[in-house]
Amino acid sequence: YLLAWVFMLLGQRPAQYALLKVCDVLAPTFKDGSHIYILRVPRVKQRKAARLEFKERLITPQIGKLLYEHALKVKTSFEGLLSDPSQAPLFPQTVNRNQPIGMEFHQTATLLSSKLTRILEELEVFSERTGDLIHVTATRFRRTIGTRAAQEGPGELIIAELLDHTDNPNVGVYVQ
Image (spheres, rainbow, N blue to C red):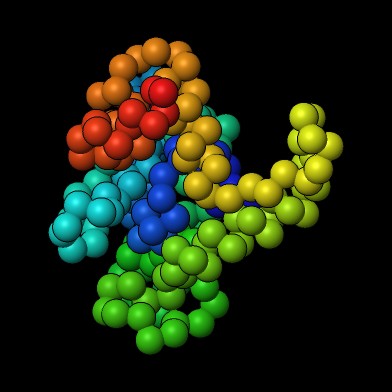
């Protein structure tokens, strides 16, 4: 459920979600006791090693609170399994399948994409235009976010930032 919401909210690449760890969910508290929820999303496709650079993304309070509570549960479940449970994957798999050190129990981007597709297929969402079942993928959310941003007109640099592009030449497809 949370995986689907994070895909819908942010439209990031599956590889970015596969790299998420419990420590990437932040909930700073203000003086009045209120919280904001932040997800530190690892950057990919930057020709650098994984988890060296991050983009901080604000998460809506409704989903942010659930995501933060989920992160705490995952952290607790990895006590005794990992030397530092805060380094547990946010969306773990049940067994550790020869993952590199530091990425134990992480799912692959392909597996996360497949799970998202299965979750959404169970909802049986039909297209208003065709009447057929909608085939929903991670890429579809990403393109929808880019297209809607272009329709609202903030400019290519803002769209590039939203989609975590290093520069804006590839954003032209959304603006067109």
